[in-house]
Image (cartoon, rainbow, N blue to C red; front, side, top):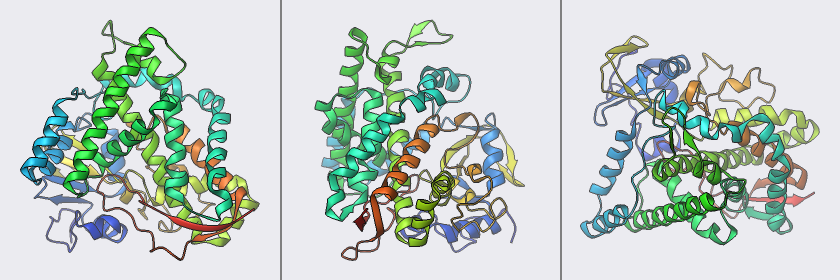
Amino acid sequence: MSETEQAGDLDIEPFAPDQLRHPYAGYKVLRDRAPVYKVPELGLHLVTRYDLVREALKDTATFSSEFDDFLAMAQQMTLATLPADVRARIEAVNAEMITVPPTMLTLDEPGHTRYRSLVSQLFTGSEIRRGEAMVQAIIDHHLQRFLDSGETDFIAGFAFAVPLRIIADRLGIPDSERDCFEAGAKASAAGLRLTAVAPETLLQRAEAARDLQRLLLELLADRRRQPQADMISVLAHAELEGCDRPLTDPEALSILGQFLVAGHETTTSTLGWGMLMLCRDPGLQEQLREEPALLKTFVEEVLRLESPVQGLPRVVTRDTELGGYPLQAGELVMLRYGAANRDERQFVDPDALDVHRDKAGMQMAFGSGIHHCIGAPLARQELSLGFAAVLRAMREIRLHQGFPEPEAEASFILRNLPELHIAYQRS
């Protein structure tokens, strides 16, 4: 079959829950037979081959990042399925919130770099190294909280808690507001998963998002009066280059919201998937303990094999083609990083974890080009230090037999394990 087959020509339902939980066999079919795959009921095209994803990421003039309309449409579709009373309550909560403008993730040049430059100083190599002791202390603290028990839900006890504490400290969230921040962080990430949940859960998420926005507005006002060494203070006093004006509260909220998800949810996901891989391979545990220098490649391989962001959309700005497939201005393409990262055209034996893989950093879990994740150095630091500490503290790490086999959530954008129960011997 040709590269231009349409949805329906292949026996794949990209948005079916089982396909979302177990996407990789389907990704291979798409890469081989229809690497630009039209899903007409959703008005978008899935791009699954590494070279084509990279081509689209580099051509920012043709493939725009201004996809806010797609996210708004997805939210409206979800609201339309709810009972009228719940929908009205959610809409009332949303009406209490400030509408935030596009800043980094959903903005093209020159605006994208104008906003990104405001916070780039916080993620330089020297700044990341300066914060290493703090990151290590947080990792050690959370390990000690459950280490003696010999078992834990690794997601709740470590993979979620550690990145959340780190990003909260970097933003400047007071200890007294950590519960509100945690609830808001969960709501922000859940909103990007595009998964089916109970109506009351959606209402709770909306309320948590509203409460978090109120908290951040209060902190922005406080930092304008009394700046501290944190990201909120940087944004509270930032001036937008070329505009000769301070950053507005809605702009600051937009940037903070993006860092909340990018700096927390993706690291949580990768810690969880990496631990699952360790549980399933005792030999790998020993290899990494004996050769800790291999941890760097292990982290890259976990990111490649289980990309925490499976894909993001782009808007086609002009009639064009990709891989010989015609695209029209206004159409959406969904660049599937999770598929590109297992493309055998790019990676030898792509479904295998190889801690000796050459050029493992070519994986696309952090995107590529101008939208490459600005927090990638911090994420890599957290992951490397986190896995090293776990391997030092635990032996015989295994899945807890008293719980079902761990399974991914049926999510279209983010890929995560809701829970991961493990057992181990303390070193």
